[in-house]
Length: 430
Image (tube, rainbow, N blue to C red; front, top):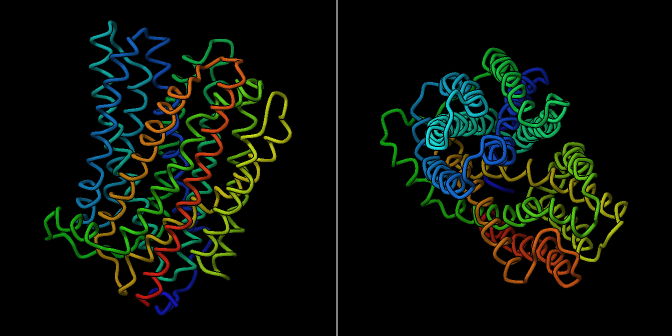
């Protein structure tokens, strides 16, 4: 029995309260996708900004964004409630997204300056809202099973936001093109963002805050870093996160060049995310019966068994890849629902939640570094193996298939071993 299992189980949150808490994840997920997928193309192709200058600016902004997250998390622990920082952040996020996709300036220098200022606002607002929303969920429930239920609802609604954001720009743009669609999406986002924030802030139950209002900001960060259980869990999260981020980085190349099915990219992505959302209840129930660690290990095994076959696919293997997307998407549900729930268990294992924002700030930092590390591993490795986008050379396509499918499976296996290592320490602490 883990330390948190000995805590008295509180009454489950009513479904309306749980939904009210989770609905904020929809606009947060909707905001994240355009920042990574659409924004570079919008400024590069549509507005004519130099790709070199754009890439350098985005790199600096993203590194600064990741590094400031622990400070924002520790600062949030000093607030009177989680609702206060979120109430400040969401309007800034809404206005910032409009500013990003409706710049009132012209010329490369002015556009880069506008992008830098707008992106800084969006990143800070997004981080404050995301960290506090995650910490709030951890503090809402003292029971380990209930924590997984809270996390699953939040992440399931986040997947719904991802699906909406992935199709909305094209639908809103219509014959006017993607750039017009992004402007209309940004305006629609304001309504969705503020509406969901109003529901969450007005109807979701508050949670007790950690007693950190008088403590220095650095104290919470130091407490989290010094926690050996947290460091082990973070190692699992990073290894598993990179394993998931490499296919996300390369999937469009794989579908276009290996499968020769570029027109079906949206279908494959939608299938993957819908399967992830559909699998959430399964992992919640399984983790309640066998424990979160064993359930997560089962999901990792499913992911490897399903995904490794992608390395053998070729042109026209659409049905086989759709099956792989469905099964690996099912495993995604566990990757989203269980790690934050385990993190909440680690924070509250002594019977009280302390420095929750600082823990989640470091967790958010790791999430963002996973994306950067995945690109830093996969793209140079592909270049070293000789792959170039659009190729029809068999050796280059084999290299792409290997990096896309085999490398993530090796990393996923390493994450599973690290999770067993974490579990050994976790059980000894009970």
